[in-house]
Length: 315
Ligand SMILES: [Zn+2]
Image (tube, rainbow, N blue to C red):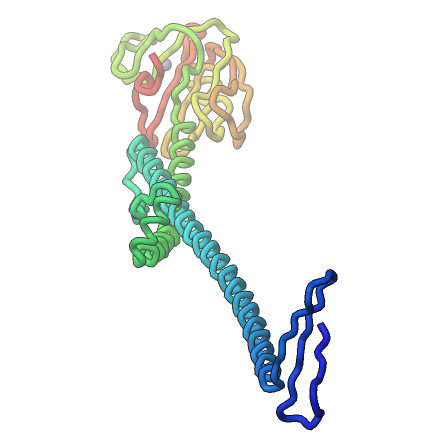
């Protein structure tokens, strides 16, 4: 193409001719264009170009905004799922706390203790949201549901925060009571102090010395001389030595008002002030003091008062 000025170069009225010359023997084509037409066409092209640039830019912006929107939407879904997850976890925690409280009460019932006075950690279900997807869909339908779930979760967390210290206190109280019960049990004389037959029971009987009536303060268990004698419960040795009619005697204080006496011993194997445990040997069967044959005279005293030892002994 060869834009070719035609005529005088005096500005207005100028014309251009575009000639197309084919590479064969055909006639060339010629277009005659006015200068005004060329100017307008130029302006139109520039406007078109600018519009195109602006359109491309707008499209780009829209695309970016769309990407951001999708990103936010995905983030929003994730957050919703996270909130539902936290809600479920909180409900689960409340359930576990309630189980601990139930266990506390069940142990108290077993041990005949007063029930725990703690705030029950009642799990407030968060409408059982089902799967995260179902929940999200339903939540999308009900815009206020998520806000309600958040509120309920906050309330649940508050309740957990309140219930934990009370439960902890109750469990500590239970631990103290169990420990006390354990010590009381360890202090209860529930063991045969030696093996043998009971030849004389507790209470009124004919004296083996002269046949007059007397009150027998314990039981006599016949056993060969030298048979081991064991502490019937944990305690502290208060007497270990000779004491009149008892002969060689051991007196053990078990605490909780309980004490035991082991008399007519051949040998004593503990000393005063010694701490003894249930089943520990305290001496050997003998016939010292007011005794006719080797046997153990065994007494159990509750608050200083002799009681029937058979009440404490296993069958
Ligand atoms: Zn006796």
